Each structure stands twice: as structure tokens, then as C-alpha cells.
Image 1 (cartoon, rainbow, N blue to C red):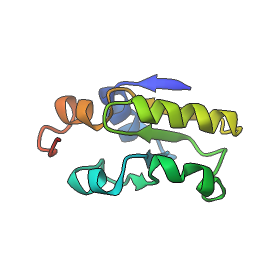
Image 2 (image 1 turned 90 degrees about the horizontal axis):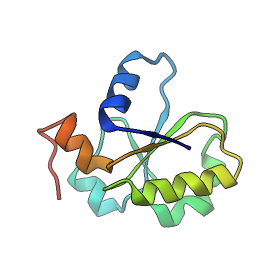
Image 3 (image 1 turned 135 degrees about the vertical axis):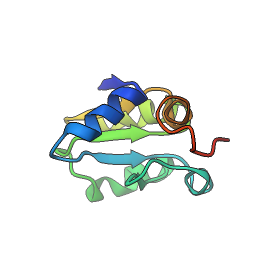
Length: 106
């Protein structure tokens, strides 16, 4: 699994032609407070039951509040043979600090 800072992810999203899946693994209430545009919510506890909805060949950037749950999900996905996993280091909190200062935080 690759680790990327919020700034690296932001710059990558601006330049890539094939958009990765932005997989937000927080809870619904957290996602309702704030989320990165175009991210899809799959709460962490639902991932094992929803693997069939995810493409193991699609590049996937995993997102959470501080980067800990997303790292755990990334490791789980790699064990399930997903090939291109990126963890957003620092999560949405770091994203709000370094990329989008207008984002609500909690």
C-alpha cells in the first residue's frame, strides 16, 4: 500500500486521466459533516460484505478521519488481492488543513 499526503493526492487527482475510486470508510454521520468531493462512502464495518461492489484492479484511495482506519482497510483490501491501494495520510483532517480550508472539521 502506498501512503500519500493530502497535497500529493490533490495534485494527483488534478493530473490523472483515470480517476481512482475515493473510498471513504468513515461512518455516515462523519461523511455528512464533511467529505472529499466525488468520494464514495463504504463504512469500514461494511467493507467485507461489499467486496463484490469494488473492483480489485481499480486504483483506490482510502479515506478516513485521521488515516488509521483507512490504513487498516487498505491492508484488508490488499489481503483480498486488491492491487492499487493508496492511503490518504492524515485523513480528512489533514485534507482540511492543507488542501481545503473551507472544509468543516470535527
